[in-house]
Image (cartoon, one colour):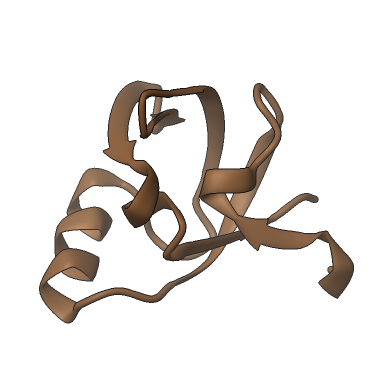
Length: 78
C-alpha cells in the first residue's frame, strides 16, 4: 500500500474501485456506516459527485452520503 495514494472518499476518482482505510467520525455514525457496508477494507466505487453529495457503489448497492461525511472516510487505491 502506497501512503501517497491515500485520500478521502470525497476526493476519490470516479468509477475507480478504492478500499476503505479508516472512518473518522462520531462512534454512532461509524456504526451506522459499517451497517451499510462502509467498513474498513471494503471495496467501493465513487460513481458521482454533485450538489454536496457523493453516490457510491457499496456491496453492489448504490448509496448516497453527503460530502462532509465522505470527507471522514479515508480510502486508498490498490
